[in-house]
Length: 310
Image (tube, rainbow, N blue to C red):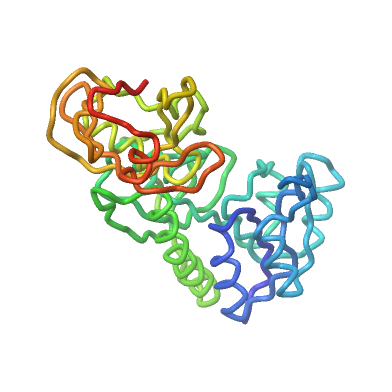
């Protein structure tokens, strides 16, 4: 029989999972998501991607600020759900909520647990130069991404893949995996395996302080740092382009050969020296401008070899 499902998610990453759950014939009785936030020049309230999609599907939407109140927990229990599907929701689920569904609260996590538990697993995997990532369906418990795992799907991370590209590849992969998990609940074959105790790492939120490019690092580390933050929040460097120092967002690089004082532009086509080795700047973006090829940026800003980036 189709399951009664409460869906809990917020960003674009969650939407294909919602579509897969609804498309498999399950009854999504409610969608929980973060409340609309002011955005854009007019600062009008903007619904989350999950909110928009749930409205299109005719699913009731709830946007509580917390699930810790007795009122919120009673409302959640009132959905009489078989399972809750949680994908990048953004609020902590207290124990009464975790215990409310008849089967479990299932979380789709975008890493190969126990590596990269926490808030930013996609970015952290790319920034660390990991050769692979994946998605896992796990049973939620009170610890941070510590629950037992039911299903896993792996995906290679190419040497030039950005966090955005990994995000876009993992989302549909996770949607199919969650649909498979719900199918296994229907036929009684879903089983869980405890996570390994070794290899635990934490994917903390990206801070503003760490987005600046550190040219003294090795070329490979700089390359991984840039692609791990692309397209959002974006790595950046400082440059004097004739009107004082300004920030330039760096969206794509390539590994390159070269040496010199870290941060020095070595060639007109964008090779910049690092602490060891070099990178070639491929795509950049000035504040208030569109992303552009470095060649166009350099020509417009009249950059010449020898310029130091900070």
